[in-house]
Length: 142
Image (cartoon, rainbow, N blue to C red):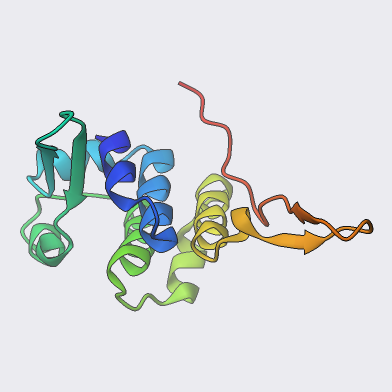
């Protein structure tokens, strides 16, 4: 599901950042799928899976208890929703809810949404060099 979500987001840095944030956090993909909030489809030619999160249905799923979560988990989800669906988020409320690991994920998501992984700078020889991402995604341990 994580790969299918990312495949559907490729090319839109904010949508990519939301998918990567949820995948790296690890809590939400399975929860969203179990709550019927993720639609997975196979493309007609090639059969690759594509997935999308049903963002408009999220508030109802949270309100009726289909998506139980801690304050920190909800903060991560709110950031992902803001990136993917453009909903406003209170960064002060989010920041105080995050532990160091989740904060690193949120910072990486914002850097990715801003395109820092594609930023370039002129080199001394006149060529362009790709800069390191402003904030890297943490290494995932499986």
